[in-house]
Image 1 (tube, rainbow, N blue to C red):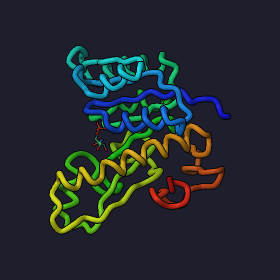
Image 2 (cartoon, rainbow, N blue to C red):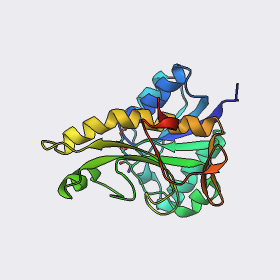
Image 3 (cartoon, rainbow, N blue to C red):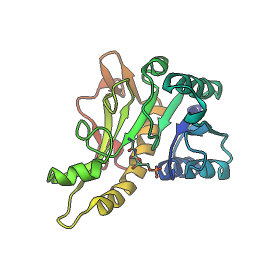
Image 4 (cartoon, protein in one colour):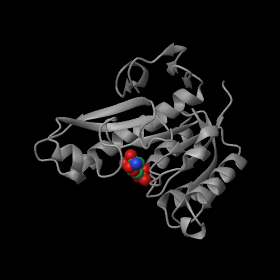
Length: 220
Ligand code: GAR
């Protein structure tokens, strides 16, 4: 049995992806220990979910800091102090200052609701519909200083239906996100997947393309 990987989670909103991580852990499917759930919003649903699960929480409000760099310095100091080895961004809606990210290279992942490199940033569902895409999806990637630009680990795809609007597309994608994020976190926690000098390695082999939910490694 591998030792539990210590993880912290950052979330700005309702926290359904955090809930998926907590549920996978409770079901014995995720070898992690949650050290902290932090948010930039005092009323984030994610903080309540964490409290219910008896995970330490932190609400750190940007308005109390002079600038992005000082906010991010404090946030990342608190994350490091929690003992976290991996940081999971689960709906964290702030851009993070590159200088605080550097020591965490290969130890931060983010879930983003698009098939990266398509649609970095906001309004991803709307943009996929406007482009007339036949498929849409979500990506989990390692975080770098480039917004939504780090190496993509895995994706979940779904077809865009003729009647889809932003909301139907988002709501059909969300359950896939809830499988994707715990699955990728599990691969990292069990030391099967990491970011090496030449790219992402799975079972010590360079990954040629992102893993796909539903196929082989992410079959569950
Ligand atoms: C998720 O759809 C996630 O992919 C997205 O925010 C939502 C959070 O939902 N993340 C981003 O847009 C990051 N740029 P949740 O709070 O219910 O997990």
